[in-house]
Image (cartoon, rainbow over the protein chains, first blue to last red):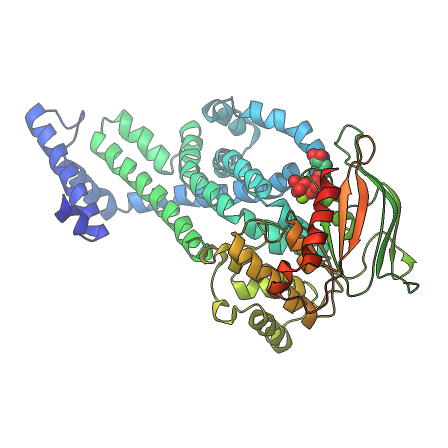
Amino acid sequence: MRLLRSLPNWLTILISFLMLLAGWQLLVMIGGYPSFILPSPANVAQQIVVVVADGRLLRHSLITISEIIPGLLIGFFVALPLGYLLAKSPLAERLISPYLIASQAIPIIAVAPLLTIWIASTYWSRVLVAALVVFFPVLINIIAGLRSVPPELYELMHALKATPGQIFRKLEFPAALPIILAGLKVGATLSVIGALVGEFVQPKSQGLGFLLVTARYQFKTDLVFVILLTLAAIALSLYGLVALVERRVLRWQT
Amino acid sequence: MNETPFLAADHIHYAYPDGDGRSVLADVSLSIAQGAFVALVGPSGVGKSTLLRILGGLLPPGGGQLWHNGRPEQAHDEPVGIVFQRDNLMPWRTVYENVVLPLELQGINGRSAAERVSQMLDLVGLAGEADAYPAQLSGGMAQRVALARALVHKPLLLLLDEPFGALDALTRERMGQELLRIWQANPVTVFMVTHSISEAVFLADEVLVMGRASGEAATITHRFPIRLPRPRRFEMQRTAVFQDEVTAVREAISV
Ligand SMILES: Nc1ncnc2c1ncn2[C@@H]1O[C@H](COP(=O)(O)OP(=O)(O)OP(=O)(O)O)[C@@H](O)[C@H]1O
Ligand SMILES: [Mg+2]
């Protein structure tokens, strides 16, 4: 145990990953499962080589990523002003928030088909599903962040005759930033789910979701595994990117 | 006595908008001379902070009139300096960045701002901490930073709302001394709310007592000009004059 703790971080991650692979391989060997039920790590690795070599993985990944990023950005930048309005205006909050909360009781998988009816473009309907999934947790965090500003600091700004713009730039935005970035991290992983749901209801010949649906129909379970791993990698990278930004801008948090 | 006061309040009333119509302040009148040090004491919840906010232009009075240098205006046209009991500093800014804030808001940047900030940090004895973040400071250091920030833009009025309330007794005493030194080095009028009667008597030219004379709303019930010479020295706290003033204020509060 002590040895494990003294190792560098990346090495412990590598060791745990190798142990996971070994356990997986052992399970397949002992259980004797056919590949279409549970492919072995070796099968999956072979499949990775195949889809990387013929360019399919990259092509479909890029399409899905091109839906995720705008979805995340749109969800975030729509939530930002609305969150500000809701945090600032009790009237707006009373008018709008019941609908927002009620909308969260409806699963996105039920709303997504509607969007494909209303929006002709396959691409934009998928982006919109991703944006919708990102929107709510980010909105909640923006409101919580703005509400967390100590009243003393507002009074300080007023005593110093700060303009509303100065209060936003120099007080509200930096004060709310940690909680907003925490919301963006949640949103980053959700945006992957959103884009995938969008592709499930609109599986038109492209994207990782389309590839997943066809792989499943053809019982190419090893390909399903490759796609799941790719999605996890995309979500992790996005999360890591936001965490990196966070670490840079929140250096004051010791 | 006949000269125009720096700041005067005339029959001020106040009720919080969400306070069920209950008046907090009624008929508060006071006048503060230019450069004076005035302390306000009174029981908890009586309305001291409310009055401080009105005097600072942070709350509009519900009735009555404020006078600034003889002009009837409800708010200051210039920024004032303010220090609260806690949560004074922006945790995402360094000590330097916190202190420079009032200048930044006035559009003063560059060398002159930097010089003024380091001058203020010298004054409060924190020249070496310019790059520290508030999380790395002790309570006393944080309040000294807040004091430096409150004075960096040379305000005419300094409002202190229990600025040393969260500090231990020893640090508190030392901070009081430092405050006097800083006040003497700056042409600023001080209005300070405190819970410590001896601190009020030791620091101030005049101690105001707030209480609820009749019914619900509070007003200034007593005022005590403090007959201790300046500069104040710590030993004066043992004199009979000091003890008498403290006793008088204490009795005024408990009545
Ligand atoms: N924002 C507010 N809304 C409604 N009522 C308030 C508000 N702030 C204070 N009050 C009420 O006004 C009264 C006076 O409050 P204030 O903070 O001025 O008292 P204080 O003398 O400063 O007390 P303390 O010594 O405990 O700080 C209290 O009864 C309080 O409940
Ligand atoms: Mg108070």
